[in-house]
Image (cartoon, rainbow, N blue to C red; front, side):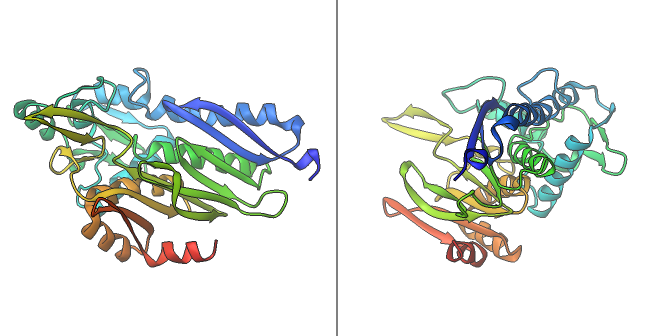
Length: 321
């Protein structure tokens, strides 16, 4: 393998996590490529991060009832996808979940160690309903109905992966693996001709893979309840509350699904679908994934261990690896 086409790895920080890109490119191009990657991710943050007070989404969330906002094209694209998935899952996925995210301690308002009381929980739930959002995708105009709080954290990270991958392809970097906070998309192959292979982590076991997938023109995203959570002790026992919230109940998920992994051409969709399927749970989630012919794998808790359930599309991808 010549030095000119060796695999190089670029790294940085964005969206409260890390990013990395492995690519085959001349050494002389790396500085400009790194700057370009960071610029694309910074743009996503400036438009869609609720952790940034000056972002477009934060300004909308603080805006007066009845105010109109013309969204930048990337923000509009992500919101349109989020609202479409909300409609298709009957609210199991909901981009207006922000009040609940903050209330349960997983948003910019700060962490907490106790479940919220019934009264504030009921107040937050009244603000969560994707059907309140008035958005014209053609004009990119978004109306603030009053107290709506958008949270796109379950889709914007995947979109960031897509922005970087699309930009790299436009720069002629046809062989690359893009990762932001564990969500990935890959194109082409390594210089030695081998595929970009990624492992799906077994929940709670970083050294064990639940599956290995070769990516080329595909993205992969995983949603799990085992990384971000808090535990509340009481009555001699501890209860764990996951960061994955069910917008329909206002509470963290509490079922057998430990993680869901989705393969899709667009990481934005893989990211959001992984969250939606996790909320739906094993039975309804698998049924939805099969109806939509998604490539998805569920890792379920069973008998003190884990079992995997995959759709035919996911199994086919595994076999081709």
